[in-house]
Image 1 (cartoon, helix red, strand yellow):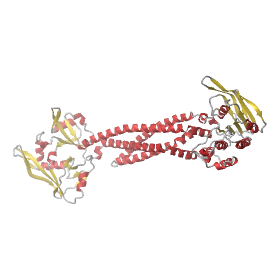
Image 2 (cartoon, helix red, strand yellow; image 1 turned 120 degrees about the vertical axis):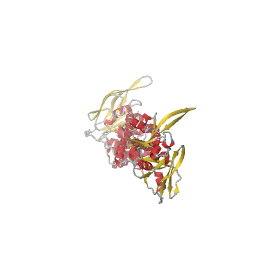
Image 3 (spheres, rainbow, N blue to C red; image 1 turned 60 degrees about the vertical axis):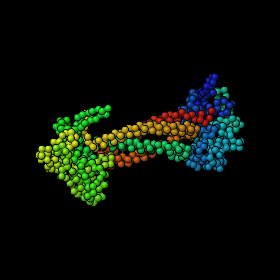
Image 4 (tube, rainbow, N blue to C red; image 1 turned 45 degrees about the vertical axis):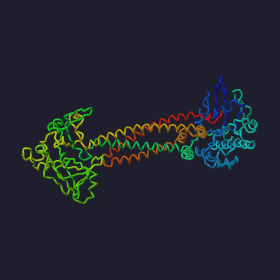
Amino acid sequence: MLEVKNIYKKIKTDKKEVVILNDISFKFSNNGLYGIFGESGAGKTTFLNIIEGIDKNFSGDLFFNNKKYKNYEEVKSDFSICFQSNTLLSDFNVFENLKLECDLYGIDYKNIEDLLRKFGLEYLKNKKINELSGGEIQRICIIRSLLKKPKVVFLDEPTGSVDSKNAELIFDYLKEISKEVLVIVVSHDIESLKKYSDFILEIKKNKLSFIEYKYITPCKLDNSNKKIRTKFKDIIKKFSKEHLKKFSTQNTGLFISFLVICIIFSCLISSYLSFEYINKNLDLYFFNTNYYTISKKVENQNYDGLSLIKYERPLKNEVDLILGNNDFITDISFDYYFNYTKIFINDIEFNELITFEPYEGYEKLYYCSNQLFNKIKSKETSIKIELELPYSLEGETLYNNINIIENNMEFNLIDELSLVDSYKIYYPYYYYKNLFSSYKINGNNQKEINLYKYILDSANDSIESSYKLVLFSDNFNLINKDVYSKTFDIANNCQTSWEPYYSLASTIIYFVSIFLIIALLGVFFLYSYLFFIRILSNRRNIAILKILGCDNRTIFKIFISDILLILGISLLLGLIIGCVIFYMFNTFFEISSILNQALYFLGIYGSFLILFFLAIYCLLIFYKAYLKKINIKEELNSI
């Protein structure tokens, strides 16, 4: 049973408030055809909108099946509404419009064929809505409202745009179904109402009154709750397809932009983690990171704004005092003598510039850089190193007749931090220290001494001293260079080449991160704009879907499902590509290190996803609230 109690409705005009309905109470029976008429502006449609549940701005109470309701959402499975205006989806043909209702309520498609046949409209089945006449549209709307076999059917001027023959056909069918359900019709055709209605009501001067009453056989109301069965996939399959066509350019742009952002973000994370890990663990992964040179700053002179720093070799006890009890080994440098080294391949001198660097070794074992190894590995000939050892005698630089020659050398390839292509040979320092100690030369007093002692006794500011000491340490991070930077210059070639590269990379990552944040905000606002435009440009379609029985959640999914799909695919592809990039950055790490780095990577990327989806979630909450504000009667011009 449908019942209204004390319905009161007023509207504001420019000058005053006008009462449309004043304290109306009425009980409808379980079945029968009720006709409502009145003068134009009397409030017929307003009264119909109130009892349908789509006009909520009134005072009073509505009851159906002895349960109070306030809006259409609560009774949509039992109520069907046929508006005076066209409420068909223009993107669909006739059958698809009717099929949508069937999908929502789990109705057999056979009912579509039966109703089309009863109304004589089988020929319209596959026609687009824009190909139909006004009368055909009205009859299709009526057919759709009857598909779910509701308990109450509301019709506003159902015959307003049809001829007399079709009007009789419509009323004949309404009369037939009114034997089982309650049919409420608003019409200006008083003659048709008198002919077909079981009850005729008039709204006049804000009141509802009986004009005519005919006896009908009451029908027992079915109190079982009808559950809506929504085939969501079937609904959005066609609907989303249409929207994808309309927004294909935007969707493509969104997909590409967000995918690029995800890939860049993955690259940033991978590069950042890799650089940080390398920076902290250089001594674990690269050769010769335990070798330092130490020079003492003895003079700082300014010449017309130009600062010149004079260096000399520090004393070993000075270095030991500064370095404390840490496990460091200091000794003299052989750099000056290795500047006179020549390398021969198959007795032909190799004329490229070669740098020699010591490592803490005692055996005659040589290593070389990738560039040199690639240069000589194909040479199946002898490789020879020749050192000519210069020294000073009575103030004159002489060349000793003794040459140190290493024949048939073999080089081992090692992992080194090589940021600039160069030819480099790593020689065993203590092997050559012992070798130099075995060579005897004549000192200034014609006293025979070994070469090592000669270098050791040379002046600290002489070229033989190389102006520095060498230092070997097992821990790359134990030396704090900043503490001694005013007095000593402590350098490690690996670190020296790494630090500017690391600084440059960090700066690039920093600025790209800022750019990425700006781009991400841009994509977020673009998504927001598309969400809004979709809902705004489909307000009428949304109102239609609400009348059909779709709840706000389902409608929302229909309109944003493709965008959310694009988001998901972009994030997934970004993660996959990011993992590939991460692996490429970390191939030289040990498995345990890679696993640790991978956890950091997934943690940062996951945090990024969580933050982004929180922002999207907040956006969705806003648009869901906006969706609820869409007024059905205003969108369908039903007043």
